[in-house]
Image (cartoon, rainbow, N blue to C red; front, side, top):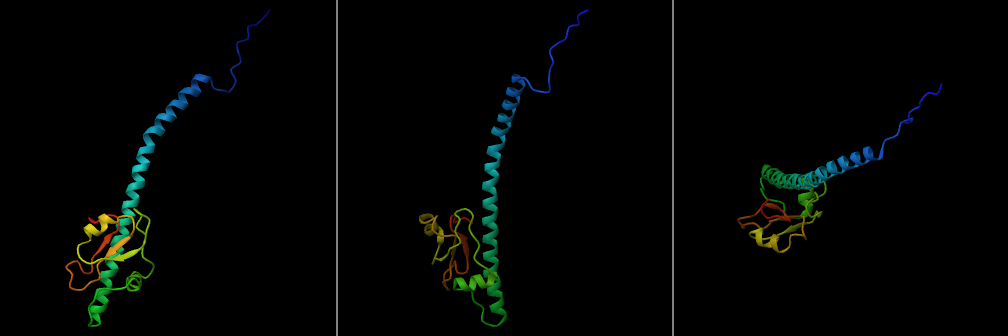
Length: 142
């Protein structure tokens, strides 16, 4: 008596199953990649805003510490700003620069004309209405 033996299906996958899995992975990747790129940009913005906040805070702390000694003034050198920061000037993640440049007057035009040259813009000129203020070198609105 002869018994019919069916095809032995081993542990492998058929071609159609593999194609379906590849298509599903491709769709997931197409959805996930734009989200990841957007999160990367938001992380850079957040890091830059944090660096700007630390610079502004350092300038304010320098002013407060000099006021406590009776000679209130804002820092006028990069070394004084770095001393108030207790470390190096942070890097602006939007343009990858940590250069602190000085400007006189409204920085808006200055930053718009050279947005990729400076990490940070600081007004160190007494009597100027913007005296003691710090901006991100790539964006005059921050």
